Amino acid sequence: MAGKICSCLAGGETETPKYTYRRLSEPTTANLKAKYNVVVIGSGYGGSIAASRAARAGVSVCVLERGKELQPGQYPDDILQAAGETQVDINTGDSGIDCKLGQPTDLVDIVVNHDVTVVQGCGLGGGSLINANVGLDSDPRVFDDKVWPKAFRDDLEAVNGVDRDHAWQMLKPSPYPRRYPSLTKMGQLKKAAKAVAKEVLDIEDMDKVFYRPPLYVNFKDTKSNHVGVPQAACVGCGNCCSGCNYGAKNTLIMNYLPDAKNHGADIFTKVEVKAVEKVDGGEWRVSYVTHAGDSASEERTLRADIVILGAGSLGSTKILLNSRKRGLNMSDQLGERFSTNGDTISFSYDGRDAMESVGLPPGFEKEDERKPVGPCISSIIDLRSPQKDLREGYVIEDSSPPHMTEMGYSILMAIESHVSGIDTFPDKSLWEDTMRSLRPDNISRTLGMLTMSQDKAQGRLVLDQHGDIAMHYPNIGQEKNFELVNRGHKVAAGSLEGTFIPNPVWGGLFAKSRDVKSVITVHPLGGCAMGESGQTGVVNHKGQVFQGNTGEVYETLYVVDGAVIPRSLGVNPTLTICMVAERCMRLLAEDCGWTVNYSFGKKR
Image 1 (tube, one colour):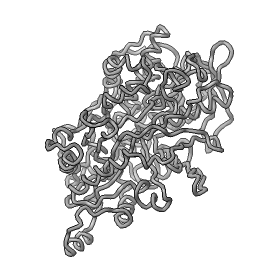
Image 2 (cartoon, one colour; image 1 turned 45 degrees about the horizontal axis):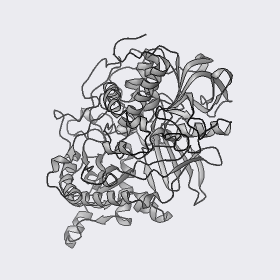
Image 3 (tube, helix red, strand yellow; image 1 turned 45 degrees about the vertical axis):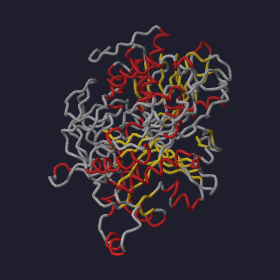
Image 4 (cartoon, helix red, strand yellow; image 1 turned 90 degrees about the horizontal axis):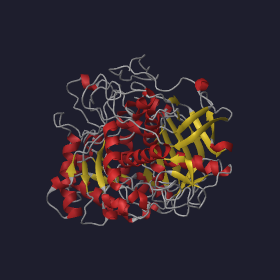
């Protein structure tokens, strides 16, 4: 894909990518047509899959994305750039704090409420731009839950077969290669795995729970991937969660979205959809504003035969809540079954040995003495055992914060070690304790531990007084899974001879100052959950939106993203979301009589 190289953001040194990339989105909305066969709202995993599959069917497709397009070389690489790419919506209720920071097109979108904080990606490619790249299958027992529609449960062979294969072929996940340099943090998590496996599962064989998970990362230099995009090989900088400036990360702008573009889709960024309305003739009116300047434009509209929402749990739910205010008949279940996916982060601080888990600055790979950190997540302790109850299972993954956060990370850990830290080796002598406190660079011996578990999916998404989305999930931090996870994390920290530091908002400084155990999630799910009818869900097994509380659906209005997942998945959810979205699009194509050619290299 030839074209002018994307310019770097001003304000600091940014790594220049090896290859050049063509722009996928239109520079303005001037070329936006008045009518499309399919309008896709949002460009995360569900939206990108919808755009690719509909475009491959040969119909006219338009993608509308609130954020902007960032290509390799444009992601923030210092703290000032990061601050300039962060939007924050704070509405905690208890303290009366209510404010907005940043622009609605900024890359990192943080929504802070009383019990839950959501961190999500905003831009062309959605959460894939800043996630940790892990492609794990859910525990099969997740799908035994009758909260899933029967038609979906009856189709699991295809979901785990053809639908999974289509997603796998496009995203191409693979583990961190054994031919690559060994990673210190991986070795340390492996050490912790033995202790945790014994404590949690009462097994001695660490190899049963420790492995390298599949990652959406490219480890082989290629001038043209399966959809014609050049990609460099991963250099192991560890900065996956601030955006990959090398082009090695298999974000959606490296696969599904250029595939949609290759097959004729029109893609527009800085366009925020407000609502959808049914109009005469069976068409849909999509109302939107643009964010080309500092503020939104006046509301405009376009029409579509089919509307597919893929704006994520919060985004898709917000659009449907606004649509209901404009008269669209919706299920009373809209906004229900919100889940944090049991997300937790804890830390083993200032352990005995080096961890080397903080991201490295641009150009580190040119310095022989700098050892790669590896991808943000490179290894896992998988504690989902068939012999234990599903709700007691969880996974622990190593974590690398971006290099730009190192100073703040160091300060926070130092403070939390005194506020909430638990010394896992209390029998040290006074001399050992004193010498340890005098060691420099404590953060180099600190390991972040990311976990997904099983919450009860009893949260609720609503519109606040300003019309923004808000999360209500009272006492979520009191649910049993979070206590189980923190006990496991404490064992891991002990095996590394580190100080155990729980999530600051759950058991640390911020939790104690507000007297609430809150949760931070990077995997929000639900809000438009699947169900048998409008009495139990918002969409049916195909993703079609129910008309009110009935079993009738709007046959041409779909939701195909994480919003339709009706429960916690207990692992990184992207692969499951992709499988569900691929299934929705497979069934949509069948209903519409479309033929979708899934082979590569054939363009319209």
